Length: 273
Ligand SMILES: [Zn+2]
Image (cartoon, rainbow, N blue to C red):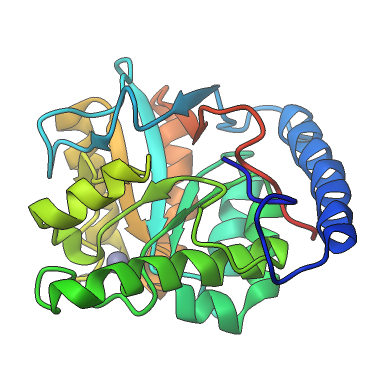
């Protein structure tokens, strides 16, 4: 699935090879850091789950009939709508404090405006998925515009990560803005081998409430569900505030974090820091 060195007409091959070398070095560093979390007693990341469109094209029980094969007390942490400089670093710090890895579904325009933050997310060992260029509803715009909205978002994130404006994502994971799917856009993503992520539960962090209320809401929902793909929004300051307590709750209640990555070896290329 990688595009580095293959078919890209905008960057010379030597430049691509430099990126590959840098990326490989950082990938090793990120993996080593994840394996050697310096503090004992952290939540940690219990296992890596490889995900591909052939076996799980669409996951998340809020949206689809199937989800990821998670055991009881296993959770996948996901964050939408970043990168956002005031709050994404606070989310990264909370995850690093507990050695927990997550998946960030980035919007293309802010990714193009804050490429260093995109690379920082990847360098910390997190997975980077895609969430369109401007977060417009793909249900409400003209069908002729949906492909551009998806592809522009992918290429902006790929450019921030690897310096290559390609519409083939190095991590083929996508989430619809507002979960607003259409049969045509679902078919389009499936034809491209891109896994569509919904969610199994969420914090409703787009609604007004206090931090204490958000924490109670998500922990109550998790208690009821027992497992699942959890959706937060890293641009929400209140979620950044709640996250350390939520991760401690996971640790104290014996939940385990599962990290999702693309199935194809080498498909996920880590960025330079
Ligand atoms: Zn969103």
